[in-house]
Image (cartoon, rainbow, N blue to C red):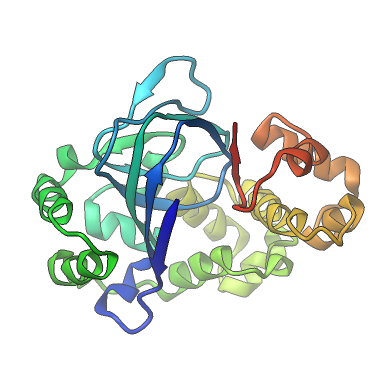
Length: 265
């Protein structure tokens, strides 16, 4: 598999894009994708992808250009033949201004982005004609809209803390509220809007995400992972982990590959 990515820190896209990535190759496999806490636009230039969305038993076929939101359960995806995806990872605080939908409306689902923003169909065709990742990135810099809406700095701060490797800020609702200068009640409202989660759920979700990163450190025991991620004890860690994935942390450690949140079969 060939992979490439860039973080547009010096681009006009930095106001709403945290990463642009591309994966290409041949793949005949099934993949279990754990909740990753991300919102992203995905372009598919190869074979159709089928899978089972969180909580569903029906096999759904992903559109060739879709947006997916934050998931609280695993996704099962099946790949056959050529595999070629390009992704644009978005900051949660920018989604409503850019696309006219609340990030919370995207939880545990994928939506055909061309039905929401028809110009993305044209963009798909333009990208499909290009060969290199650099060319695609340059096209996105030219074609993606300018972010003109005023940024709510507290929402931006909450989004940035959520994506940063700083679980201590999410130790409790009160601690997080102090970090982002909201009352606990205000924080709960903003968390629902940006992430589709209550403030309490958001703190647990962040701890779960951090635990995945720590499990990929082979030098740490699962007990050390639990405490480092901010859980009360290992039993609490196991309960939360299983609620999001359907498996124990030890089972994930045994099956994991090199890429966090992804298990290939």
